[in-house]
Structure formats: structure tokens, C-alpha cells
Image 1 (cartoon, rainbow, N blue to C red):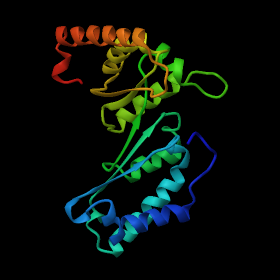
Image 2: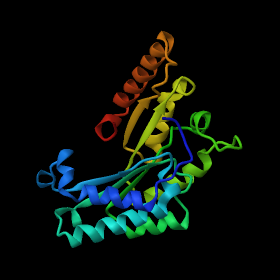
Image 3: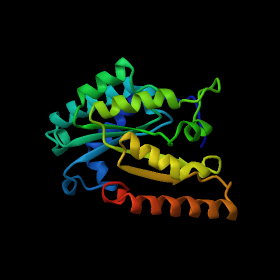
Length: 213
């Protein structure tokens, strides 16, 4: 649908919780067969709405306990963030509040050269330096060593080096996705093959495959 400036209201968020904890949710999932629930917040950039997410969680927990729902003590929180706001006081308060339950994965595409080809602020500055600093804080907070990497024609030639760079930063698992726009051709496919073959050879030689993927 494209990016908009629309924002979810707290009333809409409450309706989502009410549906999730009601019998009507049986149309989508079977709570009695689901020992826990993962509450996944996506955007845009979810950390722009950390106040709303915190309100959502307060209401979810209150209602789950009021209803004696099995998910009151069996839930986790997941979000994928560009990392630019991770170090702010509000986000860090949220991380502390839900320590052990919240995983805020920070997306970083590899080396500074690669990352900044696709991710930059509205004034044109690349975001890598800020994201790298926040990744270090994320690991200090006990963050899970995985991230999402987006592959596009512009950063494809850096894929192998970028992957090794992320491994060196402390990541163990990379979830790599290509952009879905109609921008690909056979030459790009051949380059993707070359990058992955080179990476595979290095991972075998260095035995990285034993604890990285």
C-alpha cells in the first residue's frame, strides 16, 4: 500500500488486544494449542511508536491476567528496527521493562559502504555509524545475535564481504532477503551465485559453518 503518515490509535490497539484474547481469535489460531504468543510489532519503523507499543503491552498484560488467560505469563515481544532510535531513553526503558521477553532485532546490511548505499537519513547521510553504535549496545543488553539483511542490485557485489563483516561484529545468524521489486536480471543472478559460492568456500575453509548460518 506504500508508506503513509497514518498512525494507529490506542483505541485501535486495544481492539487488537481484545480480539486476541477473545473467543473470536479461534477463527485465526487455536489458543488452547498455543502455549505462548509472540507479539510482533512491524512498521515502518516500530520504535517511532514505542509509547504506543508500551501502552499496548500494559493493556495486554492487564487483560490477560484479568481473564486468567494462559498467555498472561507466556508471551514474548518481537520487532525489527533500523536501529536509529535504539539508544534513546524511552526505548532503553522498554528494553529494561521487558528484559528476557523482548527481542528488538536491528537491521544492518554489512559494511559501511554496503549499508549506506540503501539506508540513509532524509538529508542523505548514511545511517551506518549510528546503527553500528546501537548494535554494540544491543549486544551489551543481551540481544539475540541475528539480524535481517536486505539484498538489492546496488549492494549485491558486497554480499560476501558484508556477511563476514557481520559475523565479525558478533552476529551468528543472518536472515537474507532480496528486494521484491522488478529490478532483477540474469547478470544479477550470476553475481548472486558468485557471491554465495565465494562465501561458502570461506565458511568451509574457516569452519564458520559450525556456529554461523
